[in-house]
Image (cartoon, rainbow, N blue to C red; front, top):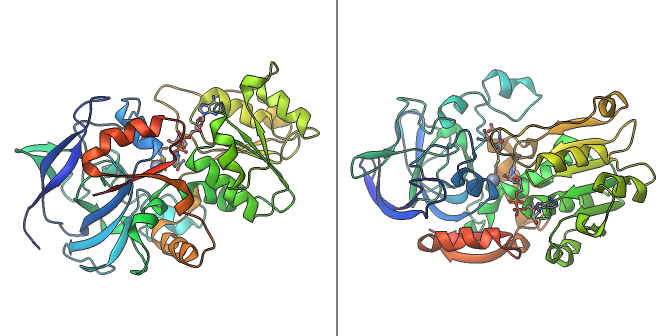
Length: 375
Ligand code: NAD
Ligand code: AHE
Ligand code: ZN
């Protein structure tokens, strides 16, 4: 298949909110600096649903969504040295070129090399897509497009991993789990003994809980409007639960009262701007830090009284938990293999690519964390 167009199955999103269509998609060979990957397993993340909903300013249609996956390199383009056919890989929506201003700064995991192209659904080389259906180009998504049996990604966007790792599990290391763990370990740097509040107990929020527990946090307070989230959250380290619907006071006040003035760290894992405000305002005066993890819809803005910051609260955000993708995803795989981090516990459903519309329905239901699709 090397150097040839591959025809395979992929789920195409033609329009916002219209069911995805399983199509025979033509996938062009990788050009210089590109890698064609056979995707074996992909999970769905809330961000896929967000873009599909039409609320993502970068959302382009028709496209192939998906960014939490694992697979095997099928072929590589000219000049690609770090991976070869047969290597097991995780595509990474946050690239790491190790050469740009961002990568060399030592201050961020964001990479500037290809972000311009991935934001407009094309490949860097020729600003075109490698996907087409009956001659019509289909946009890439997040530089990954994993809802396809084959995808083409930039070489700076593939993490080579231990071939012994089960791909049907480690696919989750493409997004949600590292995001939550890293929000705690890299972005907030939670210390032992801290009080932590987590808004939203989906996969990302539960991974925050897991990270906070491993960092030695004393109180880990989970906040969700769905009571069904609570029982399971205990297994991830959540020590107390609050359902805002059970209180008349604003949720920030409830938390301030519970914690003698506020929490040391809070995390917004929903994507709701009014909750982002509550998450900042439930932080302790003088030092409390709030991390925005959730992705809010186009046009939404955050607000608070500047006095909240003047009096020492800190507002931060995180992308992929601050992890440098190509360097650190393989280390996370090793941590899973050594049983130092959970993955299996986040997988509540397993389906096939053909059943992807059912998987999106499940994602919106209360008992689904991650649904892994066999591709
Ligand atoms: P999810 O839908 O599984 O979890 C969201 C949780 O929030 C659910 O349990 C839901 O019941 C709860 N919730 C909804 N409204 C609420 C409210 N008003 N108050 C309290 N709880 C509420 O989603 P997920 O996959 O865990 O992703 C969470 C968010 O993180 C999404 O916005 C996603 O786009 C974003 N995300 C960001 C990054 C990043 O790098 N920054 C990475 C992955 C996901
Ligand atoms: N296109 C969106 C961007 C949304 C966003 O912030 N994405 C996160 C990852 S979410 C993964 O589930 C991110 O890492 N952002 C940094 C980046 O470089 O995109 C919008 O709203 O414009
Ligand atoms: Zn995601």
